[in-house]
Amino acid sequence: EGQLVETGGGLVQPGGSLRLSCAASGFTFSFYWMSWVRQAPGKGLEWVANINQDGSEAYYVDSVKGRFTISRDIAKNSLSLQMNSLRAEDSAVYYCARDLVTVLRGVPSRWFDPWGQGTLVTVSS
Amino acid sequence: SYELTQPPSVSVAPGQTARISCGGDNIGGNSVHWYQQRPGQAPVVVVYDDGDRPSGVPERFSGSKSGNTATLAISGAEAGDEADYYCQVWDSSSDHYVFGTGTKVSVL
Image (cartoon, rainbow over the protein chains, first blue to last red):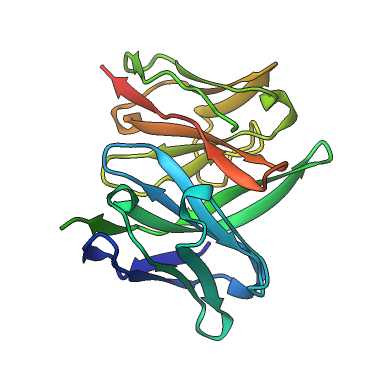
């Protein structure tokens, strides 16, 4: 089934940096794309970034390009998100999630299962 | 950019059926997935690929799609179904994931 546990959240000043980690267990980590999804307080879900199985490909939402870096350590079954130049609007609960790929009527699609419990990042002076 | 629109809230009486819509351009050409997020908890997928249910999700949850609108139906609504629900598609043209605006379901 799989389990994901995020750590590393906290309070950081604008312009500062923070590194989030996600420990994966219960599934073969190296088989799957992985993502980070965030949720600002009282707001909806926003996909942030994802990374392929061996870490050679990564994609980002435009608002974090050049500031955030997603990476993975297959030996440690761990996913990371390095966040630099943080802004107030980056404040959110950050979830890691496993990407699943399915094909319906010849059209591929991606979705998330499972999700971690989330870690809160607050950017404030 | 791709947008998915959901009603902000839906109310349903216990035992009745709640229906949550998700609209967007070309949604008919994309698979739609639905997540339930109870207060203070992480999202959980309840329907994937328009209408399939992961193991463990009650049959009361069903998904359908017509034209550019997808619908999540919750039949026999229970107090435990009170949650926020989000639809999601993968936009292959941009390789980005798009979530709907979210719907708060209240069982009154």
